Length: 529
Image (tube, rainbow, N blue to C red; front, side, top):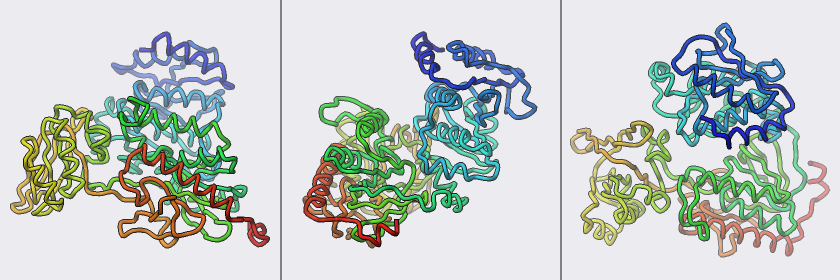
């Protein structure tokens, strides 16, 4: 299972281990047990600081294919039920290294909130080894457990625990349970976990009360392509820069194939996000990750209050929070994002070449998506909720001329079905007869509009009725010192390459503003800080 190359890489990683780590495997019988023990023994063979021990944990572990990690004989709170291969292999390696003393990848403010938890929290994370989004959840909770002994977390491979999956009626992964109750599922990441913990116990924010960052020249809100471009361009001007990113990478993380980023023939969302992070780390940029902006206080020096309770004082702001696709809100949608459910025909259409797909939405974006896809896929079925299409007639005429486009009107999407982790059908209801139909297909493109991530700016800058921040040619908003870039703005065509250019433009405009406007800290502002 583990190649010589992987073992050699593990050996080099293990050289930095400061503590002894033991994989404690529950005793008992299981058809996969021998494979698990060999898997862990192979890993342990790379360092004297790694050991495997088979032990009866008196109910602490779920089954004979469950194991926990101890560091210098102390329980870390980290458990795995199943064999963490596939995408979860990195989760195991990081857990091992972090338990051994490698620095955690958590913002200090997040660590403070996690440390403030004063009650037992037992997390269960149901995953599949082919899930792209699951490792981030597993890795975040593993770090939470290392920060606070009140927290325990268990990765559970749903494929090996079908009885539990059926008992809890789990329809998709990741599914996170806390103390036996559903905590989060579908599209979950570290920021979602943190926000839900704060919702559960708002007092956690008190851990960072009074924490104020040094005065920044530019604070970028958003960590997608536009935000990263803004931050890098600003840092290269010698400015003091902070980035607030609830989810670093934004929507790009969920894009499995990118083939239209000029000079990069082919990449994936996760790879591009990794490159963006690497580029950011080349500069002295303060990154506040997994937190969101709760409030902006306007003034000569603007004060940003974060969901962690921290505050940032800044001379200028660039808003680059992007937009999110409006969701259907039906079963099977969130669970299958990246596995047949998509929102961008330009990005993901080529991956459905020769297959049957559906487009949900009969407005301009929906019919344009159908026309775009028709030249790639085998067939497109457009589902429109209303009795008539809302698209321009010229687009409707073009769609009706295509032999491989079928339009079904007055149809309400009920559910998106999947088998073996891939979409295989859609259920819809004929609103005129209430009859429910099933249509077999391989992909569903949701095209019912975009929702800008601008809600926190309401009342601060001018927006359109759709929530887009209104900007001019230089990314100025209606508020002096506040700029905006990318998908959150009125700039048309929501594409990665366009967002990067707009982010660079916003940075140059902010630099120009700082040169031409003397933005200094008053005595009252300094005293307040």
